[in-house]
Length: 233
Length: 251
Image 1 (cartoon, rainbow over the protein chains, first blue to last red):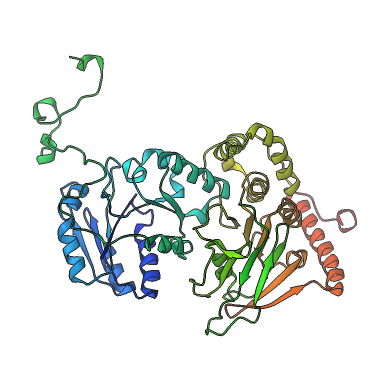
Image 2 (image 1 turned 60 degrees about the vertical axis):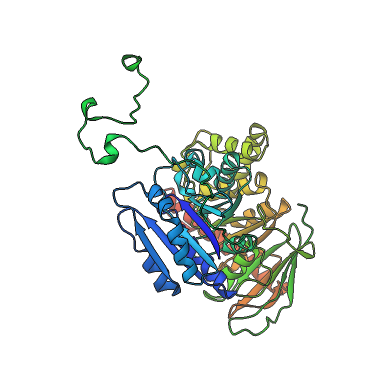
């Protein structure tokens, strides 16, 4: 079974791109399964089941950091995928704060970004973009050719090795490139012992454990302050 | 990549029957119109070209570049222009051109004047460097995009999807792009624009059904249609400027 992680900003088109890719793979007789990690609610797993008839499950992180939740449940998700006898398991993340990347070393990593976020977006997105193997750019049909080229150039400035693939999330045009790339991906090894491509944010302050009150008195653990004169030690 | 020919090799129609045209060869400077009703397969063909299909799309077509299928995923092969495309960047025309030139490793300052000159030859309302992209009209935007594709983008193929209503000199647009050694493929319903192209490919039931060149009779007819179109454009401009159509003076 090939395992693939898919990250990207909310509503960039992660699910749409994955749906098109799975449809292409199905034409070659490949079976896919999908796991959607999200925070509070999602109907994406339902979409995978309804539109493609493939096995799909969801995991909601609720009060936990979605990426911590993701990495803590990856082995279980993978085991579930193997039980479905899937050739491909797509694990789609919520991907929210841009501080980390859910991508794993030696596991193919796709990040989806859309063209409407502005020309600075590639520089702001952090490790999810800079450490991806494939950057899928969506919504290119809505902007000028020039901006599309500038945007792709900006992506290649922060990630020199990634393949940049333009996919129209509505029609699926461009997803063939992704399918051709997928042929070179190798089967997933045992996950235990593999590493994330980037560390997760440290989350050990009082607010992590449910504190809601504001003020120095209520802050403990790993607290960092702005570098202002009055805070200088 | 130096492109000498692009070949669209036939595949199948919606029922799986072989296409009646075995293939189409295109060279830099060629222009091809795609004609046919909605659902006849124009967009599918454009999509095949954009993705450099190798028998792996629904149509089963293969796109050959210089006689061979592309070994790798193409990047920068195709520029697209449609009615839907807009500028989303919050920048002036000048900043935009400089930025695009920089991403291509070109000298934007040197390109500024020719690019704006070409833009303004395609559009009735002048575009100046300090204007914001966001205030440009549909016609001005389209004109700038076409000039930019002709002079700055290095893609050998331009796919145009129904930009006939954007208020630009559409015939000149075609000349400008083909004149810069681009292969221009347009999906269009505009009769004058169709006849402006070297050849036209008739699409039917998802397949290439016929490849036609304008005959002498059609060329004469095209001139008449073009005059009629000019008349319409003039009338449009006069009414738009708030004048009245006194037929003798206006036409």
